[in-house]
Image 1 (cartoon, rainbow, N blue to C red):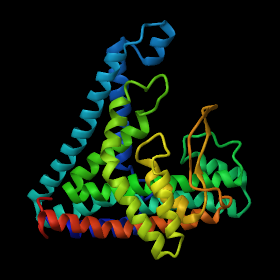
Image 2 (image 1 turned 180 degrees about the vertical axis):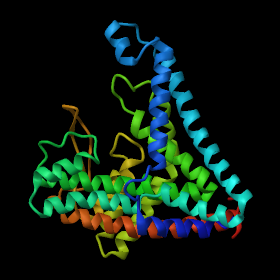
Image 3 (image 1 turned 60 degrees about the horizontal axis):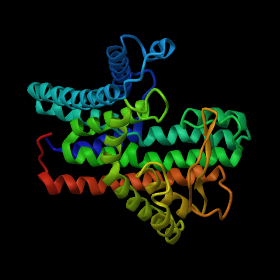
Length: 337
């Protein structure tokens, strides 16, 4: 299977159509299984739902929850990999061209370049229109923090952070894993990322059962996040942004985040745009202290959303070139996928 060509076509198809409305996305299916299996494991541990266990005052079974989390992560990730591999195998039995076309479609579904830009620009247009309430509502779909009291600059900052962080785990990391193992490994990574977004929270319910998902997500994103940061530095130079600032803030602030990976690209974006990201925010009514990223040279403005999306697109194209090079280097023009 000519994976590099399928990867390029899948990348371009994502830019062209994104995620069409009305269709069930594979990530939604993965999310459905995560919820069902998580709830089933909690019932297995406590004999009832987690909420009912709390109401009954049942003692916490931390070790059982940790083991359940590792089982959940294993089943979801390996199951996703095997299902996608099986679909490609069946398509190949019909005809190699059918397998190739399916591979292109699957790769398109893994990537989210256009979708990230589309959703983030909804916030941009609301701010441009002076509709702060509408902008707060739109950004609430993209971030976990409380958004009701954010001012215009804080809304724009949240959007910039979302774009910068998701450039790594929504575009560059999937490309990296596709380059290594085709759509099956790409979707396995997507399963890891979905697990992280659904169960890897430090709240009372999920702190133990989500432990495995959080750790695996950190491991999987270690190399891609740093690759994305380097590509974003190059992108800032191509776009005529402050590349010296991008390098300086990257070196200084790339670990200023609770996650070892999230600040890699956020620090580059902050330096390139001469703005400050991060800081303390409220989550579910409680302040969560976070270090700042970048220097407070000027307030974040809604135009920075468009500038960060430009960084996203140039970074995505540069990463595609690198990942195609990785695939050619590992397998040549013809791969097992």
